[in-house]
Image 1 (cartoon, rainbow, N blue to C red):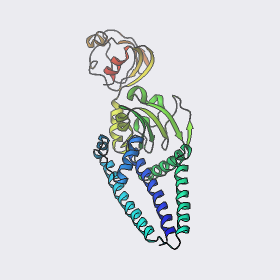
Image 2 (image 1 turned 120 degrees about the vertical axis):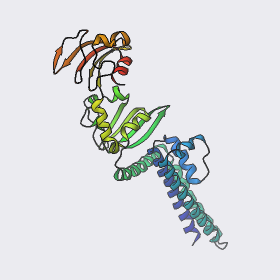
Image 3 (image 1 turned 90 degrees about the horizontal axis):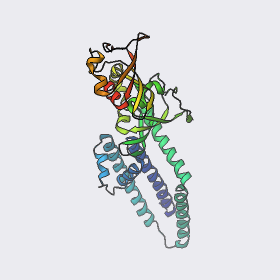
Image 4 (image 1 turned 180 degrees about the vertical axis):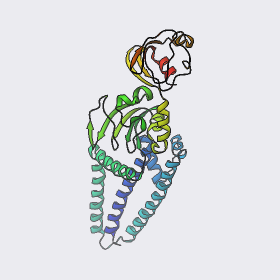
Length: 328
């Protein structure tokens, strides 16, 4: 093998090496790791430099990340052997007879390589390459997977900004507007943006999330993961749970107090088969029931009224107390 060919092959292998590190970093991000941690761990694994920080526990404690890390280390070793072999070949091809010409070729090739490295580190180019690789990896995962792809964009303690590719629609969002899904009231999750067919769409309370949408949400990561992952396995369980779940619709709020409409899918224990007077809901929780709609008719509320399944009630009181009584 000639010296020039060896150098060209080394440069090509190094470029592939850098791309492979980025691919593994994206795979780690898709499992839920923040970008900075995924990048650091991806480089550590691929270069076999070791990763003894406490962050390594986030990989060893997750079976999917362990599989990715194993593949990453094996691939990294493979590339290391190739690079060493090419360097040995390059050295053995060195000729004293054409020393000057060889140096010029080496300098030109190395100069081109450095120019490529510097060019790819420019922020717009770096972001473009990163998006292309992420899109490539996520596309093949989406094709092969029946589940939603969840990627942490930024984390703030237990709360995170998360990007979700909707491959399988969660039951609580199926055929429901954002307002009807109660995603904010019930789960404390905010939908920040929706990308449909690679275009941002305007979000209103009447927006419906669709399959193949890419949504950006903010909330507790564990809750987001619980709602949006393994949807195909949990669909029946979630559907059964939602049928029993009371629906809370915030009408207005006044500091910690709120006026709320509640659809009773399951009568809370404190009200079950009890009159309003016997339940002590006003004395114990400070909640006042203003009126009840039953079978589309407003019924008169007094101390002997009993709340039934299917009722819609409007009440006023401390919002946290209302949630504790009617949701939990």
